[in-house]
Image 1: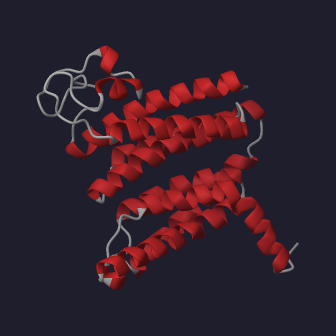
Image 2: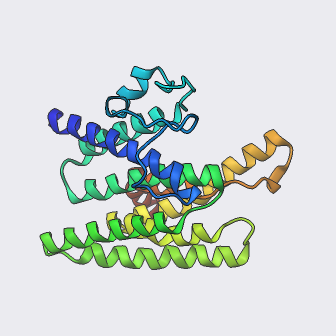
Length: 260
């Protein structure tokens, strides 16, 4: 199992490297395929040995091999984060369909959160890729297992969370962007795939995380509730909260309410 976890970490680092490309190019309207990676300062192409995830940045000591311009530590940070997250997911869930769905979520959590922090936008083509990837994993798992209950629940969860966010957007459009509304059904699908508990807790936790961060930032800047923040990252934070602790929290709550 340790060997499998190590391979997952390597795969995560490689996909983290690709995530860096998407984060840099998509907001600028550039192709994520061409041209090859190059230094943004001098335009020189990055050599293959310098493009190895994590290792390349360390080898160059965070500077371009040609012009010695500084390379943002964001690149190695994202590659390391993806490597650690992939290893953690596989160690936790093994080689399962659930793990594969979570690995898809890891990559899009990183990409969309980074873009939203930088631009206050959630690009449609990245959202579409996230939706298609998540749905394909869910459908493939149902076909292989001949168990459609999880997919049915996931689709209901997508509709429910879409409705919640659409109503919230209509009620308070300054607090949410329409990109957040588009992200909601994708997260609803993934959360409900794991159960009703993760869906309820994950959906609620997103607003809780967003409110706490908004209040803290508002207090630090002296702007109170007027502070605008990108909400996508906190939707992801809520979703991961739901995946990690949603089921036990939901069971505890139902027990307290005397439902079970």
